[in-house]
Image 1: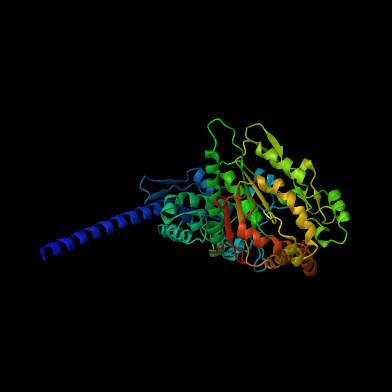
Image 2: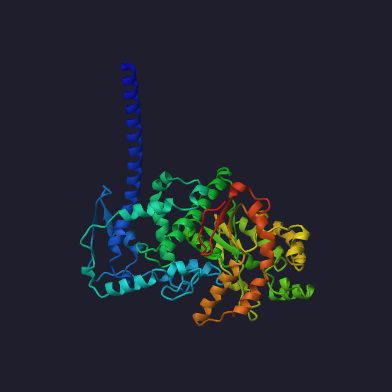
Length: 493
């Protein structure tokens, strides 16, 4: 009996030690989250200021908020009422900054903050809380500066909620991120989230669930994945060796949000000191003259009548451009990025004048290369015939694309859709939004005709891309992201 009591006592003691250890671990994680929450708590006070008179980043950069060493307490140093902070004008819908001017104008996302868009529109997530913000801010603007500060302490629990939301993201397991790792880096998550909120002109204290999902479940996880690939890429080279930029390929159907994703990632890289460049497969379309020759060489083939499918790209120009970009390893080496003007020749398009191409300078860290058919590879002739006989020529043309595009790519982001018909719905939503905004847009019938020229390729090549990955790719360097009809990541294979 005595031995049994001793055994029970030992087991209880061991259990107590385990509980205490887990408790300490949980407490440490909570402290890390709370420490990161000081920034959010400060923002909850600063956010009471009229938005047009304040830039959050300016507040922190100019040390308006000063924190004690004990992160549970902080003190606010108020400024004279006459001291105002100019709103960040470079993030208006008109590109003014160097960042915006270097981004492809034909691909530059537009974000009208207080306009309406049809359900399902790519940028609907940005505008979900616009009415609430507009009403709240209008009221605040009527108050005097000295009367807008809250009388109760800011609640740090908001960061705990955000931390739990981040931990529920569908991509974390694919990235190998644990809740402890997120707690350790919560400051970085808040920093990146703040950058993206400024880019998309969102108030980070009033994010809706769709907005939080897009930023914390999608854009930031993908950014961290690429950062990890950059680190591993750099580690392969010895000290003193020239390090070529990492090329990341983004393969995703039209309208699924890949351009906005690349836009956000490019901005994050620049904000964190990385020199990045963006390219689209659109930038390698034949000139208007070359496109006319392609059309004449393939009479009656609707898939090659306009730009888009394999055969409508200048592959020699692609190789020349990508080879040149890979050589941007030193300061002083400059190069212009090609751009395509889709509006030229009444919408048939043409390569933009080289004088309008943005110039970049080395050393380049990462190249973000996106396209709707990036990573497609030829399939057996009987497969394409079953889809559309016109696809045979496209399938033959596709044989040359690996050497022109895919072999330059070191890591892949493949965005998987559940149904190719989503492309039609997304395109239709975009055109309806353009028409409602008073801009030229295709009719529903024109949209149907436009998408019909791409659907055969989707039906023929997407299954192989999703099952096998791009040609020559390493599965360790491929991130497959399943998205729903709302363009948000979901749990997938």
